[in-house]
Amino acid sequence: MVSFTAYVSLSTVSAALVIYHAFVTRQRFFTAVMFLSNSKVALAVLGNLVVAMCLVFHKLVVKVFLGSLRGIEWEMARERFTSSIMEFLLAVTIFREGFSNTFVAMFAGLLFVKVFHWLVQDRIDYLEVTPRVSFAQHLRLAALMSLLAVIDGVLLSHTAKSAVATGGASATSLFAFEYGIQLLVILRCMLRYSFTVADLATSGRWESKSTAVFYLELVADFLRLILYAAFFAAVFFNYGLPLHLVRDLYMTYRNFRNRVTEFLQFWNVNSRLDQIPDATTEDLSRTDNICIVCREEMTPEGANKKLSCGHVFHLHCLRSWLERQQACPTCRTPIA
Ligand SMILES: [Zn+2]
Ligand SMILES: [Zn+2]
Image 1: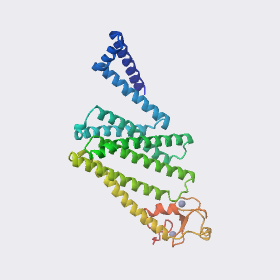
Image 2: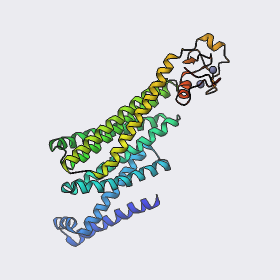
Image 3: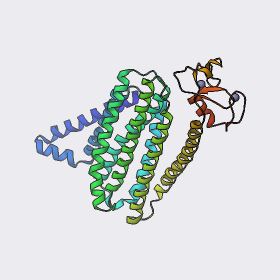
Image 4: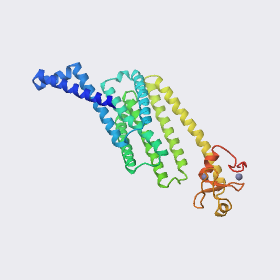
């Protein structure tokens, strides 16, 4: 933190000195500006100030919308930042004809926006296991997600137009693809977040939350795969094999395949749960009303299931049990 403050102060002071020097030695405004825009040293110092200001702005936005970050959040963002730079260098080798100052500036802008997507993703995951979050925190997170969705949407529509016009044979198609992925990420976060809020609002009694999450992840992974495949094809036909995308494409495919397998299992469990009858009030009165899976009380208002052996459990407890085992949790009678 101290080193960051020192860096920003040093950048500001050196930029001020360079500007001061230009105006003292050049007297006239025009010649001073000419000196500033032609001298390599002056440009480097001023460019560095712009970078420092961007970092300050970034920190400010994080502070306003996310508050102070946990150590792990910083660490993960830093890791992703490094791998993004690596991917950028590889992408440069493919789009070298379109490489220009604009390209670098657009990439810097993309990275600037991307960091917030990573932070939001981590924060959403964290919220799911931390129910005690203030209303203001919820509001700030929702505001940040909406803002990011708008930014992604605007930048995607801008870049996508020129990407489509050139049939993917331009560096802008890289940005169209990236903003498409980012938009997908943020929409997934928004839905995931609204599920968490809905779950909180019903104090954890929303029975079909896991179903909703399953569908969401399945659709999100599918769209991601489509985007990757489309971009891969565009680069392949215009430039040749995009080596740096092979791994990502494969990982996306594998994730989707695993998701489908999980989904089929989940579907299987659900259809079996449908065949198990609901427990009636009499069924409950015949037991001590305690679900052996979670050791909590079962009420007639909640959803409870009765197995053929007569043992009764919460619906959600039985669901998570069936994902791992196929016998009654109490007496081990196989569940038909
Ligand atoms: Zn239970
Ligand atoms: Zn039993």
